[in-house]
Image 1: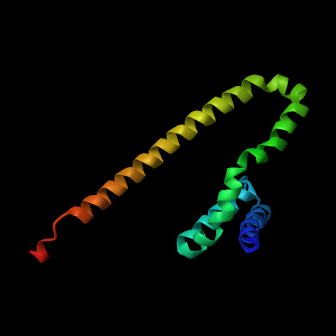
Image 2: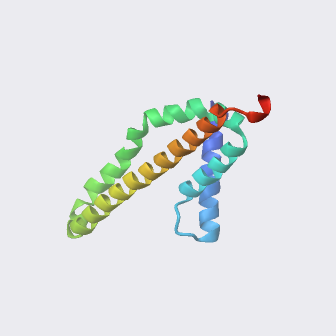
Image 3: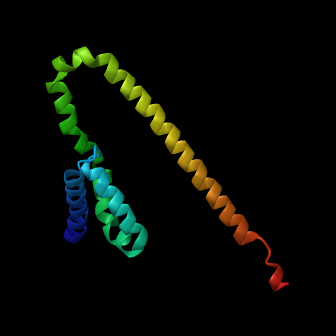
Amino acid sequence: MVQSIAVLLAFQCLGELVAYVTRVPIPGPVIGMVLFLGLLSASPALAQRVEPVSRGLLNHLSLLFVPAGVGVMALADAMKGQLIAISVAIVASTILSIAVGALVAGGLMARMERKRRRLDAPNPTQA
């Protein structure tokens, strides 16, 4: 369990390092997740090792939003002048997230259907 947490934190730190060195406008944890996804694609055994810890973190994900909520409450006065911009950003990003999620899900479903058809198709060389 400790090793799994260490792997997750190592990739977050690696992402932070890459973001700092390259000065890209992408958060370090996002870069770390992409790098970790690449490693998981290459090593499915690692995915099985970090899954229990990852599921535990996901089960308590709502706790990670508490600091953000406190920050919003503490800066409420400063945000009043930005209310329209914040609202537009929230609505637009929500719509975009739903659209991207639908496109990815549709693409994956089509891919699975093609794979299923290929597996179910009769093989003429075996006849």
